[in-house]
Image: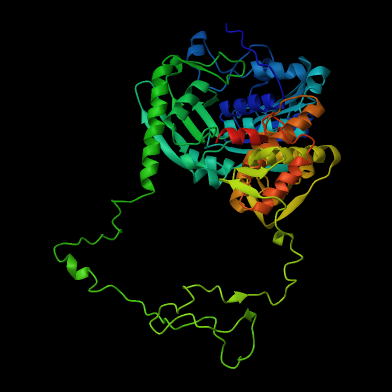
Amino acid sequence: MIAAGEVVQRPASVVKELMENAVDAGATDVKVVITDAGRTLIQVIDNGSGMSPDDAVLCFERHATSKLSSAEDLHHILTFGFRGEALASIAAVAEVTLRTRIASEEAGVEVVMAASENKGTREVSCPVGTNISVRNLFYNIPARRKFLKSDNVELRHIVEEFQRVALTRPEIAFSLTHNGRDIHVVKAAKSFKFRIQDLLGPAIVGDIVDIAAETSIATLRGYVGKPESAKKTLGNQFFFVNGRYFRSPYLHKAVMKAYENMVPEGSTPSYFIYLEVDPATVDVNIHPTKAEIKFEEDQLLFQTVMAAVKEAMGRSSVSGSLEFDNPEARDIPVMGTRFEEYRPSSIPTVGVDWNYNPFEEMPGQAGQDQGFAGQDQGFAGQDGQPSSGQSGSYGTRRYTDPNPNYGALFEDRTLPTAQMLIIQGRYILTQSASGIMIVHVRRARERLFYDRFLKALREEAHVSQTALFPVQVNVGVEGRLTLDEHGETLRKLGFDIAPFGPDTVVVNGVPEGYSAAPGSVETLVSDLLLILSDETQALPEVMEQSLAQKFAVLGASASEKMSSPLEAQRLTDALLQSENPEFTAAGRRIISIVPADELEKRF
């Protein structure tokens, strides 16, 4: 009646459908086993209700379902899907083996499908529940298999779908294994907050606050991130309705409007928002994978979400200040009419020895110059004031370095060859042949970073500075997979990032010119993930230029303001040796010359 039919786009589509079926079957333990990012094997094992031998054969028919008993049920859908239409689509593009048994039967049944054909059905011994193995995905559609992305990309999509299902059912235990390595193993949790902690780490839980609202159209509960924890990278933004994950740009705007003027532009906070609405007011069949849904009262829901998030932000901003209701808090003393008793009777005095001279020779060192030229002529008179002829100055006591060659090995001791004037740490002014040359510091650094990174990507020539102390950064499972996928590119650019567990990395070194401070490194890794998450396809040469430009902008933005004339001299010299010193890779001007004639006109 609705022509339902799933489209299997990638291995993650199969994982999503099979996990949802396991949850709908009443399972309390769901295991997902993946080999080669789903290309070779996708296996989902559950301890749910299972299927009878007749249903096991029938479930592979198109539009067959065991979740609806009448046409009216289409308007009150509370399950993830209609077990059947997904299995038919999966069996059309892969080799599927289904083993299942219901509690009332002593033996189970095995059904083998390939290219939508039943290859055999037999009675087998198996536990209560369902075990589905999907092998050689797209084996009969080479074009579709060819366009699958790398293993890390496909695995990242699988992890996303796994997390979306696991976050909806904290009472169910889930596990995800890839090539024999556990990625996620979560036990049944007491609440959604414990499930979020198990999946995404304790750092996320420490930065979220509860939200709750109840209206005539919806009941809302969940968690939203504190404004200071907002990040540039998209991630950990979840909407659920009646236990189902969905995307909603419209409701996302409601959340961001509640954070208006509270988070930096371009940053997005984390949120986990669970909605309970009347199933009759929701249409879940407007999207092939049910990732998007339609609400009847969408405007009222927008206002509800925005108000709930604003209220939570108001509570979180107060909780960090004073707790007036804390019985253990000490009372602040109140000063009454006898306040003068607490005032000091006099201003404290400081004793000063006006005759003290730090440059006098120590006893037993008479006759030794100690590096001072001239004799002691007295620095203060008897009255504590400077003696005549001195004017309060120490100009007659000149210090000479006992070792005149000290510092000769340090290049920083040399002076710039030209006069360099630094304006607000952002601009360099220096003399040129025709007038005054003005250099934009950040854009100059961007140009130099771009040239270096482009050379490193093409010739594998890189310079890395090792951090004094390695910095450990929690990036999540998806972030860890992203960094692993681009590990060779990062190494060429000068990043030394090593894996440390399934969701953590250790930064041992960064490219020369980048800050290696712990706080800067965490921000740097977040920006790296934002750059690397862009999967735009292009020619290899164009991709190299685009990547070098993004990392150049990142490095220039993270650099500190210019303060040293010598540093300004070095930057200017290096810029003038570049192939294109006047413009950045994006075409923005770096150098501006103010002719002497133009200066003369101003006077």
